[in-house]
Image (cartoon, rainbow, N blue to C red; front, top):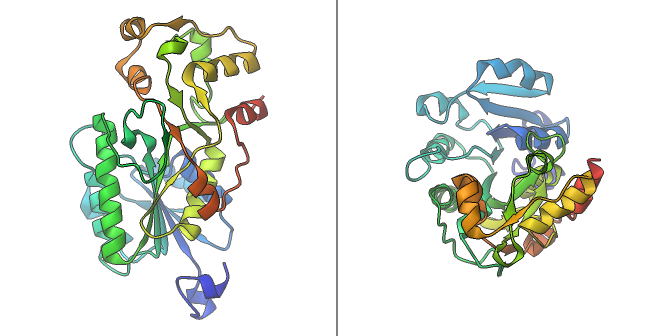
Length: 306
């Protein structure tokens, strides 16, 4: 990055090296780290001592810490110039204490210049198939979505009060052939049903590699306290998506059922994804983050996977 654009300004070179901290360094975090230039110092917070060797092998400095144990986060203060926060909230309870404690730790010394947070498009709740832009008010209908809304509020307040460029990425379904459970193949092989056309819902998608690139773009190009939809150009209902995948894989199409039948056959988690319908507008991502998708549609991504 040119020195005139660096948040560190025109300091001597040895002080200008950016330090990128990844919090929640799972599949997407590792993809983002792999895409960063080698001149940047990469750090990752991990609660597992067993992961340290693997992270080091990838050129990432591991930092032992646990978002559920605030005293372990003190060393994060003033450590990073940019932070990629991909850690989910707790699976139960109200709010997101993990994000709260992370931000509290980052405040103790000079805060980072930028922070990008991976949220979910589930914060909107059911939009009945409408097109949705980032200006639409969240109306999360699940506890999972409500915890994400709480995290977003904390991030935006942190950005305003600490002078940090905080970007919120609202992410839909993530897929990739080399990601655990990252394609519909196993579900198709199990013959899991989908809704009939008249009951079906619109879904949104993003390839994991494109998501990782969007995370990095937000760290350098995101506008202060800005929300971005990170999704591809696909406009398919869920059943049509699985039909497309079945055709590409040479597998039988999934059976179609009514919503009442689905309630009897599917898990609460599966049903929750069939209860919300929306189409995300990704214009802001393309214009402001200047992201050119490698996989503009799920057809492109699934075809590339073989």
